[in-house]
Length: 189
Image 1: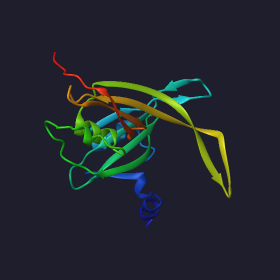
Image 2: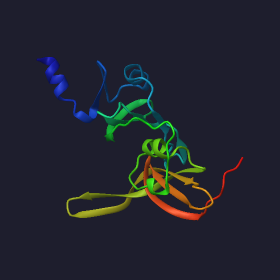
Image 3: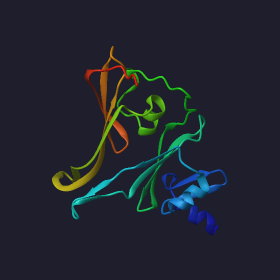
Image 4: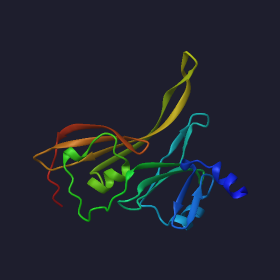
């Protein structure tokens, strides 16, 4: 009975089953790795702390792909502890030689799905920024008093001299914008 009460306090987003083991929020990265193995992607997302005026590399998102019949799991760590477990649709078997077209770059893709579909970009730029956060209390809105840290990346994909370059903007590991950006080039090395 006591075990049932303890387990009933944990929501579905607080735990993840890896084989016969369960990981839960507040577990360390070592405990999660021991239970679930190495993730398919480890994404370090530096966060800017305005109070101290510098960035910290204490946030990581690990993506686990358990195959076609299970959901992709995104585990967010802060300071080495698991703080959130999320999903990203069903998993898949990654292609050995992915074939990416400009039309495969769409809003909403997670970084893991983008890398699996299109591989590494030709160019990559990273930055952390702060964004005003709107918090609603009753009927009034207060804007500007709160800020949220956003980890932003800008990736450029080259599809050759007959196509345009595609500039992909990611925020916190998810594609938020895709734009054309000049003529592509032949990559002959």
